[in-house]
Amino acid sequence: MGNTIVNDIVGAALSQPTEVEQRRKDLALMRVASGTEVPPEVPALTVDGVGLFALGDIHGLKGKQKCGKTTALKVCLAAWLKGSQFRVMTGLDEPRILYMDTEQKRSDVKLIVTDVIRMTALPADYVDDHLQVYALRRRDFNLLLDDMRLLIGDYQPQVVIVDGIVEFVASFNDESMAKQLIHELLCISEERRLAMVCVLHTNKADDDHNMRGHLGTMLAQKAGTVLECKKDRGSGVITVTCSDARHAEMPDWSIMFAEEGSIADADERHRQALEQRRIDLQQRRQEAQAEKQKERLDYALLAIRDHGGSISRKQLTEILVKKFEVSRQTISGIISGWLNDKLLFESDGNIQSSPDIALAF
Image (cartoon, rainbow, N blue to C red):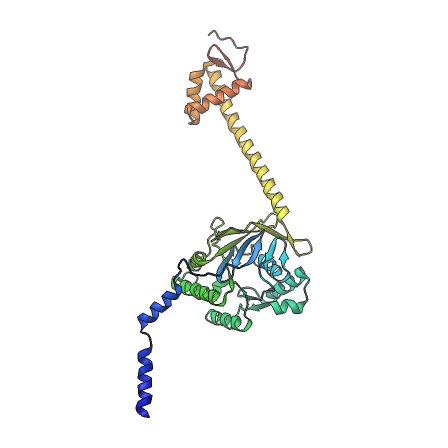
């Protein structure tokens, strides 16, 4: 009897694949060949028919501090729960959304739920069933990933939003920690077939739109979609753009706060602002060009005066080329324009400032 048990144990051990054999089996499951069947990508949201935040992948939402990232997420939440909000539409049927906020105080986190109910006009019970929001600002970073796993296991969401992914690591500049966290999030999103949206600030410099640290670099490399929120301080319009996408880029969309504090569609306001900016820029360019032309004409008139009121075209061209450091061809065209506009006059190959000036000197 004893020998039988021992033999069974030994036999079972011998029948187990070696580490190398197991690795071969694992890799074989990961091979993609011509006949491999891959399920179609399912976008969690669409904008004008372009999908974003695909299931089974991680995604990023970035922006400067206080630029409207949470506000944009409220629009996404309303679209998921109601079916559409402005131009943002759900790609899922009654999805369950887990929202983990690691940065805001509890009263501000509560506003996420309150604002979504107000935007959708849905019953509070329905919103609570389909949206679970957690205020985790006081939670230590080394607990958050296990908290996420527990909440995902209990709630089975299709979308997970982490508003403040930087709080999941001790330092966003620790390369090893950043790689490990993004790897863990990617595995969770694939295994659970959910869309994971990670919110991270961009660097402080106004012209730097990269997400912060090694964490931002790793997220940008692995993310299927990265959206960016930009706020026009003058008009208050928040514009959401697609800075990175593996497939089609989402069209821009804009929102703002109405006078009563509600979130409103601002696409038309943004279009008007862009048009006004284009007009202003064109006017500034025209004014700068006119100033440059005036400077050149004034210098040409000064050169003509210094030569007694008349100068050869060749000599004037050489003077202007040397002064303004442009090509002879450019100056020749400018002089021809002045002659056509009757700002200068030409007689017998000489340029003069007035048609009445005598050419005999």
